[in-house]
Image (cartoon, rainbow, N blue to C red; front, side):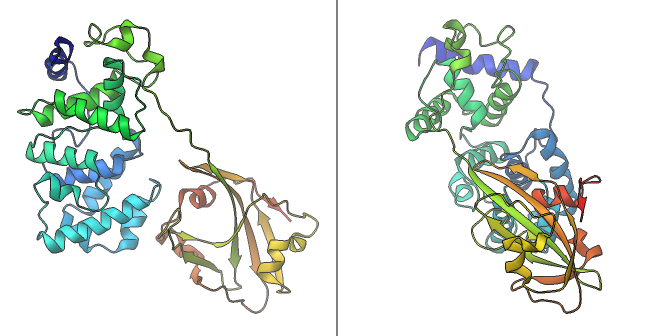
Length: 363
């Protein structure tokens, strides 16, 4: 190991002991269930947002057994707003597996932890090192950024070659006697010092060995190879009211966004729809849904938008009051409007439900 590598770990641990004051409720936690819960919540979620969810989940489900036995609708409702709902589905499935196959006790080897649904190498290493002090290095975005800059490595972090290189580097630098402290230190260092933008290089304890700083490459590292082209989707939701104040909803199924969450009557198009304000019923998607059904168009909302990692969602909400007979919408159920708060909806729909000034237009 070179002198530069040899210096990195002791300097990092010294910084962690003396200057790292990053506070989080799960920091120093040894309970594997709590560590797992925090890591799953923090996947693709900011710490300041995830913190409140972590505390709510622990209050509702203090143990993995409690989570495994809970009604799935209740778990999804508590998750509401975090997005990336596949995480929640995996959370439920893994809790049930641990409860059934491990008698509610979290497995204590890296290999068994890694085999659980929704747990990848990073999360498995975090649980193994923090809960059981096993010598497995965590490698996430914070870690790869630190390593890419410190060693001046231009290998793209989102390629197979990059993942292999940075995993080997992380493992070589790991203090095997203090794996939990080292892993916490390097993650916190990336989150508070070696920031994606405007890193705190002036006061950085690793500045003497950092190749990116020495060579003026800080803004160029780390390198990412892939530029994601987002899919454009237009979702038009019809809030179909009956004469007795019920509305149609359904649970989303299939391998698509928001699986397991609820929604109103949906018409998805591959192009934006421009409603005829003179008579919205002339619009093709309205004719397809209702035919000659007697109805009153009450409102059409402004355009709502949501950006997902690979998709850009746009759409509107159209409130319609049925007159006379009630049509049948296959796969939908009728619920009282006051009961909508009991169902978990995606953020896109909640944006409309919770908007006090939705800028609606009365027809």
